Amino acid sequence: MNEPIRLTKLAKRAGCAAKHPPGFLLPLLGQLPKVMDPRVLVGSSTADDAAIVKLNEDTALVFTTDFFTPIVDDPRDFGRVAAANALSDVYAMGGVPLSALSVVGFPDGLPASVLAEILGGAAAVAEEAGIAIAGGHTIKSEEPIFGLAVVGTVHPNKAIANSGAKPGDALILTKPLGLGIITTAAKNDNDDANAIGEAIRVMTTLNRAAAEALAPFDVHALTDVTGFGLLGHLRNVTSASGVEAEVWFDRVPVLDAARTYVKAGIAPGGTRANASFLQEWVSFAPDLADHERLILADAQTSGGLLAAVPAAIANDVRRALDAAGTLAAAVVGRIVGTGTGRIVATRTPPAPG
Ligand code: CO
Ligand code: CO
Image (cartoon, rainbow, N blue to C red; front, side):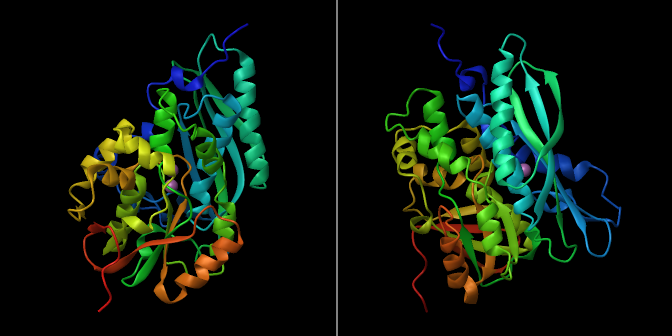
């Protein structure tokens, strides 16, 4: 009998934790020529989830690509997670997916059936999103790589960028954190609570239902929580919006096993890199332990949507998300005032008054 192939053993890094950290990327993007094309409504300057290009008065294209090395062992699950993760960036702009292409790197020596499983898993998730994977490109690579380039559409005036958050907004998160910690535990055979199944369920859940539940509301800013962690993606929102924010640790949904594992010292390198980048941006209350801070910086793959909505409608938004069956619908903090993007993380919201 052949041992089943464990995809995570073929990769040094996994999922969105393989992303280059913002401390590497942001200064580099600043050196590129400025995007001057007036049809580009959203480009790289606001660290957004996807680019938006206006086609005409009624329609803009939303397009994005996301790919990575295996985050889970099973090829079909890898395809499903990668597809849900790539599609998420269209939802995170308020867009509706239209079609996608596969982006594939595949090592010599792995059976073609493994790639067939990856592509099959991705196709199943694309179908859930209501689209087809219409083509793709495959190269030989040292480690397996998979993801999608996705196009979607949005009304040019309805795109939800990172830059619209306003003082007083409530911050709502639609999936629990801890995916980087749990997948790292599983990769290193430390997943004693066998939490990987739950993590895969979270990662393969499309953000479609959450996006559709949010669509009727006046959402000021929207992103999805992936490789830079909750605090890193919130920082993209606060700095693009010129505001400051609070995050309340006890209100943040977290997978139980992740709390246990991170306390025992388990976290992906990408999570630690996020935490070190964020030192400059985040003030932590002294009663938040180091492992709790790491949870807030944990590199997610296919994480939830993070929405900034006027506080007055926050409860209605939460109810709509609950009714749509989202995995979480938690108010995890708020935008407190104008500023340069700084975030204060405390255990609980400050007492009113
Ligand atoms: Co994103
Ligand atoms: Co992305």
